[in-house]
Image 1 (cartoon, helix red, strand yellow):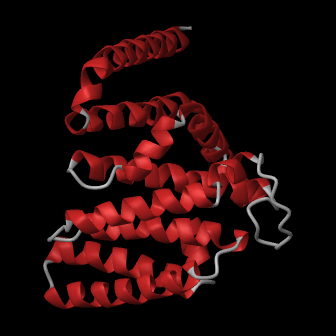
Image 2 (tube, rainbow, N blue to C red; image 1 turned 180 degrees about the vertical axis):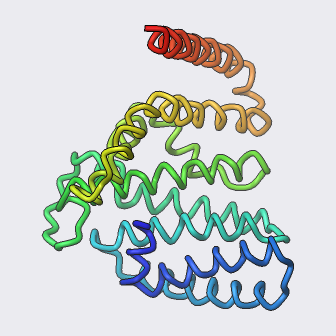
Length: 252
């Protein structure tokens, strides 16, 4: 709903939303006409993205990261996936995030003095939504890396584990910050109840990327195994502690 509201005000986002949605319908029903419609919306959205990339400012970061996220969703769900294009996308996203220091913008540590009404420094909502988009895109790039495409963006975030964890922490309140008083109480309670499970999920992503990198860095692989094995042990301990606490809470 948040991204759909963004799309209602920005044609680039709306074209990409339509591309992803129509492509999903095509995958479910096999209508070749829908495939063509999806591709037309995708091309228009990408054309607008290229145009927006020529004049980047802080007011566009949320829109551009949302566009990157939708492009991942579209490209990875097409019947014919082009690994080279996914690698180019991954590298482009990594370079973009590094160039504009988006992690620091999310956490509020940037020294930027932009004053646009929709700048990511203007509200908790903007920072948390940008952080959520970074984490979603992180997840998509890790999946691509498992398929031998992408991974540049995931590696960048994995290499800066502490900073990425801070981005995740900011992202956790994206929906409640966006909807404010309109956010249902039951949904807020659900967010709190599932917070540990979600944190466990996000904690796995850097580990997945470490595993993805093993075949590509032979000289580093031998040193990676102990690190990966220890990470699995740590996560198992956290998982066991969560299960025990949850069961004890139910009994009490």
